[in-house]
Length: 210
Image 1 (cartoon, rainbow, N blue to C red):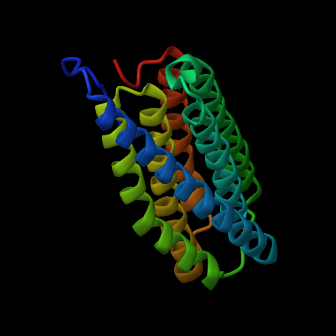
Image 2: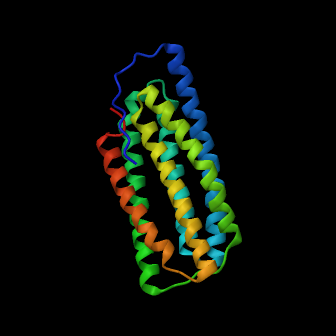
Image 3: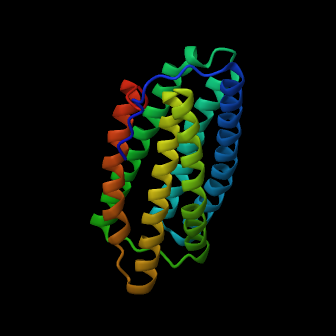
């Protein structure tokens, strides 16, 4: 997920800057709305199925809402650049929180041998998110790069990480349902946690966009 934004600086026309700012606001709003719905469904289905993976996915959606809200706050002001460092710190902390939770819960699932019940709702949710999230991430990253906004690019990475988690969740739920391989999801989730730490460090240092 390496993502440098080091192309030569381009001075944008005011109209173009305004259009990009508006686009980012809309994309962030769509991300927040989708993740609120996703969180409610995942947490409910996870509780019913006793699925650590689904509950973790729901909490990831809550973290994504926090990250997107930070960007929305930044671009709600008259001078978004002045708020960028604060927004980046919030996004970085959201990455770290996600990595910590996924690591703890994955380790607990692996060592306890806890198995979850089949969840059709969880499988459908993961599949839908796998289709929706890449488009949102790409559109926001593209607008953020053109605008030169490190926070918008960082938040797009959070959305992309949610895509990877959707894939991990889908594979884990399917393997658990079809073959009883309870360990597949937590093992793959540990890889996602490592990536989250890397992206969190980059966001904290402001390295997402030069």
